[in-house]
Amino acid sequence: MSHNTVTLPAYPDPDCVAAVALLNQRERDALILAAKGLKGREVAGRLFMAISTLDVTLIRARRKLGVETTVEAAVMLAKAGLL
Image (cartoon, rainbow, N blue to C red; front, top):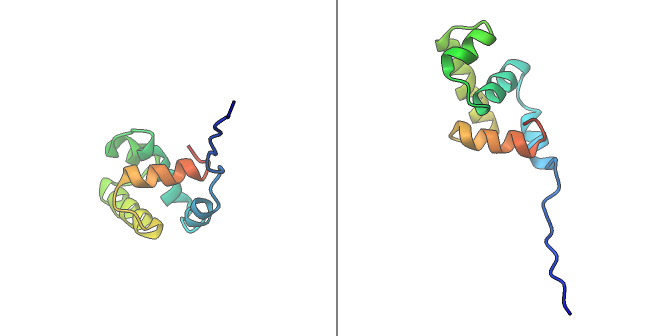
């Protein structure tokens, strides 16, 4: 009888941990809240920032991570063990 084994990726993923380490605390906090499904106004309110500042913060964070969407950023955060 043969047994099939599935190898799962190691978490946290070292590459994702390194990428997330490039973010400053505000960028990381904003991305985590957005990744958890909070709307922009809610994220901005929790972080005491203007919506326009939040938008710039999220753009800068996604650029540092090398992703285009918040969903892609959320995957990286999850792989880094932050979600």
